[in-house]
Image (tube, rainbow, N blue to C red; front, side, top):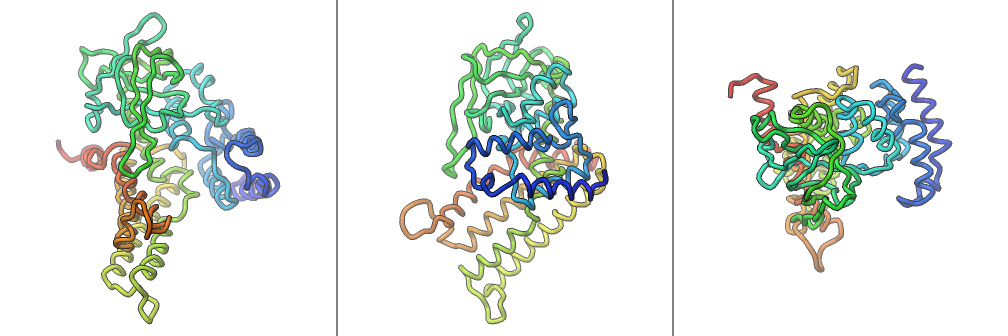
Length: 388
């Protein structure tokens, strides 16, 4: 079936099944659960995965068409803790997991039945992740895990966690790391939420005290390779490089909102332009940057016929995308002036409170998936080939 025929059939199916009662149903209701089950039956929660693991086996262009139709009809996929299951550990298991692991874990991800989280950073091992110290000791057919992870997004709601651990303390720091999978619902795992300056936080501390891991991904002491590959999947998702990014709001849409916001808070000239020329120029420049990013992402999708996650180039998109995201929220606060710095109390609207929290929360975007400083080092060494 060609892409346009597939698109037409998809649109027709959505019109028939994504009814008004489904649209209005709250998350977690029986109606919503039945709808998610229908999507899973079609393989549309993970459309590009092989059918035997719960996907639809779509090629890249059909995947893009599906995402665009889902977006056009207002369909959102089930919550996935920032893509931890579908966009990170799922593709990593497809690439490096054994068949038993794939059959046990992937179909549940494909049906949105489980939540996952990531155990990478530690209090003393953030940007220098390879210095991690969480230990895993082989004991018969399982590993015993001891240590601590931090910034484990959604750990308080997760069923499973994939963890980088040190399995050979005598090897060099990159060579003694393995990747294991743990059940979060066991006595040896303790989770403590972390509150951020924005007032909201998905982040947690996670402690392992003789926790049990029965799944080793790939080969022991090769976890650094698997961990880096997973981060490429993560960065690709953050930047909107894959097919799922084709359904996102066009980059630059926020700029039109900023222009309307500026006219409201700063003023509008008789000719309809923003009254302040400095803000006017800043918003235009921001729009140009957003447009350049959007066009580059589109070109990358068109050139990437296989739909595979790209390699080190993902760092370019992640770093640029994080900066653009921060620029959005920072400019909104600047436009609002003192009204954009409200936290609580009278004199502020809910939108103004939201602007403050979004601005503070956006600071984390240049840390998630590896700090922008790390991304620039990767770009310099692995993309541009510059010397150390």
